[in-house]
Length: 192
Image (cartoon, rainbow, N blue to C red; front, top):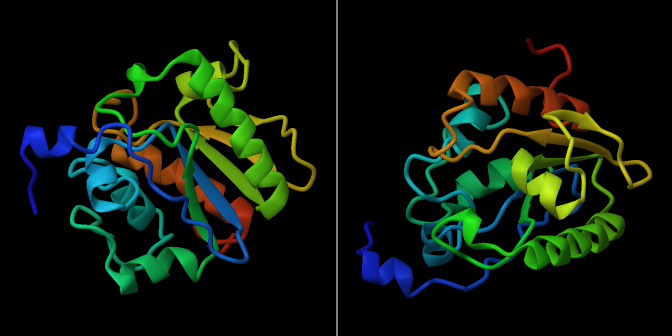
């Protein structure tokens, strides 16, 4: 499936429901849905996004999920059966994350706080250091493990998997996502 620019623009400001399996063991948190994600209803759906390739390379999924046309039920089960969920700091779809306001980021952090306290995942992984700093008022935070405000939940800030983020390679993302998944008990801790 492909979309014209006009078709994608028609999805601006829509929201994409969180993917929350029960039990939730690992919650990946993106910045906000892109227009392709809003069009398909599948998180990280835009072709070129490295989220699913990194999950597969890390051994978190048995096949590489292709969400460009939406979720295939068998592929989606690779996430939900392992207790992997996906949310966003801000639920509003935009073409670029820099279209979000600081107020939206703060409101999103409050929404996430309620979600995490209710669902109690073992690990939360926020994908994007810049958004994490702004949303959670942590201007000096660096990528890696953070002091978690949620009892019983570890917090990791990881690089954003967008193809626009040239600072991290697919191998870098896979290594980090693997570490996060091992900490959440989603993959075998003995895997290198």
